[in-house]
Length: 184
Image 1 (cartoon, rainbow, N blue to C red):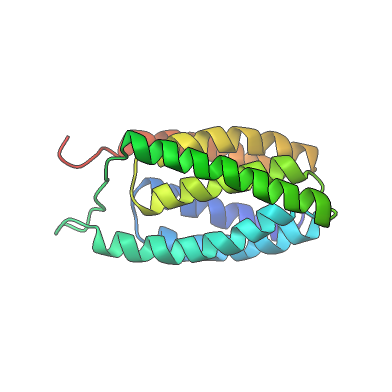
Image 2: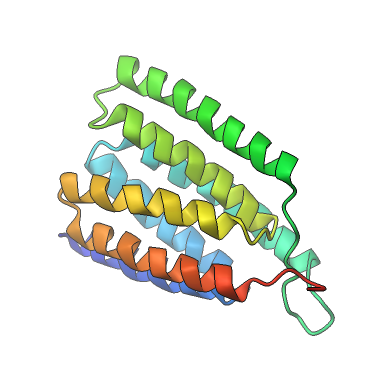
C-alpha cells in the first residue's frame, strides 16, 4: 500500500459515487483518478490497465461532453436505452479487444497477467463507452468486470485497490438502481 494507491482509491471512489448520482463533477475527478492509476499500474506492470487509464482519459472527455449536452432543463442527465443489437456489438468488440490486447501483451511485454488484464481492460472500455452514452446497462457490465478485478488486484497485492473495486460493485448496483431510463 502506497500513498499513490491511497490517493487513487480515494479519487476513484468519489468519482464513481458522483457518476452513480449523475453529477457532472464525476468527469474531472475521474481524470485525476485515471492519472493516479496510470502511474500505479505502470509500477506493478499491469500494462493493459495502464493503457486503459489513458484511454479512459479520452473517454472521460467524451463522456463529459455527451453528458453536458444530454441533460433535461433541470440539469438531470438523461438515461438512454441500450438496444439488444448494441449490447451484442459491444460485447463482441470487448471480446475482440481482449484477444488483440492479450495476444500483444503476452508476446511483447513482461505483463504480469496479460490475458486477464487484457480482458478486463477491453470490457472496461465497453462499459466506459456505455456510461458515457448514458446507458443504464453499463452498470451491469461494470459489476461483472469489477468482481473479477477484485481477485486480480488481490493476487497483485493491491489490497486497497481490491477493496475499492469491491466497494465499486456496490456503487454500480446503486448506479443501476438510480439510472432509470427517461420516460419510464
